[in-house]
Every structure is written in C-alpha cells, then in structure tokens.
Length: 331
Image (cartoon, one colour):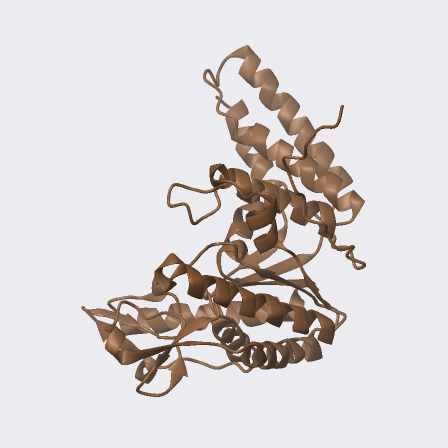
C-alpha cells in the first residue's frame, strides 16, 4: 500500500565546515538570532546574541558591525528625546533611558561587546528580517528603530539586492581581515511583517533571499541556513504558528533549531549538545518534595552526571549547575 506524504522536508545542503560545540558564536539580526539565545543557554554554547538589540534590516546590521570594528563611540549629540526618554535611531528601544548618560553608556558597552565577540568568535550568524527600511528625511539615513516617532519624519523604501550585498560584503570583509577563520551563516527570518502588507512582505523576503544567494556565491566562508523555507514549506500549517498567526510557536522553533544542530554541527558536537540539553531538563525539573529521600537520591545522581559530563567535555563549564544541585542537597 502506498502512503501519501503529509510532510515535505526541505533538502538541506551539506555543510563542509562542520561547527563544533566548543566554538564561540555571535548572532545578529532579527527573530532567528534571538531564538538562538535560549538554544545557546540550554546547550551551554558560548554565544552572544544581539548585544545592540534586534535589527531587522541588513543595512543596520552592517552599520553595527562597522561601528564595532571602528570603535565608533556614540555621543549625546546623536540622541533624540521623545516623551522624556532619550533614544538613538541606530539602536533598539531597550537602550532608551530618561538619563542620556545611561543611554550612551549602555550603547557604547554594547558596541565594545560586539567588537570583542567579532574578534574572537568562530561563527557569525546573521538573521535578515526585512528589506523594507525607514529613511530619516533630516539626514537621509536608514534607521534601525523609529521609536514611535511621527511617520512624517521618514520615507519608507525597499532596499535593492545590490545595496544589501554591497553593504554586508564590505562589513564581512572587514571582519575576516581581523578574524580570518570566522564562518558566516546567513538566514532569513520566517516572521511575516504584516504591518508592511503581505505582498510587500513577500517582495521583501524575496529580496533578502536573492541577496543571501549572491553573498554565498561570493565567498566560501559564507553559508546559508534555510530557516525561512523550513517554516513556510516544511511546517506550512497554522498549528506551528503562535496566536498572532505570524510568529513561529515553540514547537516550530524547536524543530528549526534541531535541524540547525543536525546539519551544521559535527556528530560529536550533536551528541554533546543533546546530552547537555537532557541534563538541563533534569536540572530544571521541579521536585514536589525536595527534602524527601527520593528527591535527595535524584539530586545525588544528578550531581554525578554533571561531573561526568564535565570530565568528558573539558571545554564546558558546569560550575553554576554543580553549585545549584549542591544547594539542593543541603535541604
């Protein structure tokens, strides 16, 4: 009997340079970069995610990279003020503050953190969200965030494939001059930007996809991971979306990240990542009666397993986890 296929898996490219669990990662851009945050934490991957906040458009990502590599310090003259909050057009609203000095301090700390990570990381993941940008009329500059300012201050426009490729190519070349061994993974965010309009959103995503294709063809150190295609083709069902029907839900995110691990990491790293994730689930398990003999035996076994992983994977630091379980044993 022939069974119908109810699932169309994306054919993944073979990545010749497999990633290792011990590598330091940095992820910049939109939603997929942010999704990687919990993945790094739960897998004990040494990774930094969006030290300057979410950036949806590739020009802002390139701008942040250039600022970091050129040690560009932000000053008060570049800040705006809206309803008593100081902000910067080039940075996420998480930096907004009633105190301009605090706003600048946090932005400049983020720039320094980004530079340090670009110098030392083995892998850079860039998640591109939109080719639609807002250009401030006052200085004709593309902004990262409009900070709820009047739309009359901006022109809304589409980036060209050429513009995206040129800006990112220049930024990536700068990185590779100071960190020649860095590997770059490009991806396109699967989140639909409904506010832009669905036709415009599809045009935007198509532009990003074409730009990624050109960038990958231009340099052997640049590869593409199809997060967008997995979400829209492999998981093309609303049960994989959150309530707004635009964002992937946790099931979808977990599936995408499992494919990210399976196809990009070497076999040994896949095994160690899975072991760490399983261990983390046990550490996070909430015991109803922590002082009971059963719970204490559970924690003793857990402590032995933590030490076992620490002995087998010397590049991983389990100090925090050991202390946490040891405190439970004192109850």
